[in-house]
Length: 181
Image (tube, rainbow, N blue to C red; front, top):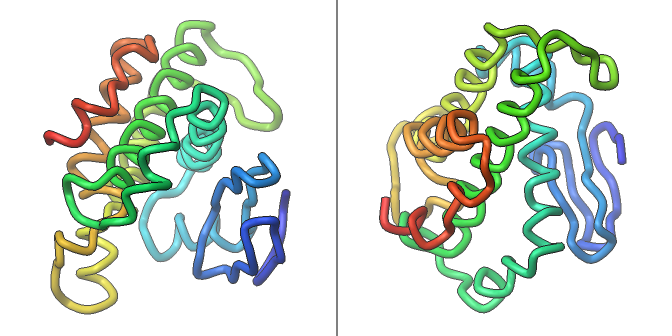
């Protein structure tokens, strides 16, 4: 579902500050179109593959829903490095990497309007690094508060995207392993 500024979803009202998100209640991905220019301009992560990474990450949440992997995060509402929330987010990054691996193996092709080339993985890595909790917290408050992490650090997000990209296998995206990093 594409939107600008704000939208009312089955998961509640969301403003552009929320960024892209997956709503398990209606099984839809919500993409604020303004986020992609912010990803490029404010976060320094331009490019089609950076955008594709964000979309693939949100689709990764849908895969988690289909596989029944969300249950733990529904019960465990804690934040922080070992939380179920961070584990799910890192797993979604890994699933995005698995998609990236498949796309790169297919050679040069078109998926929607995104053309994938061998060097595009660097765009996704820059995007993953740009939207880690540590970087976002540092930008907004001037300090890093790991106990408030919900998505993982920049290094973790890059690591888990690369893990999926290198392996090309969703089995490399173990949630239990994500919580120990």
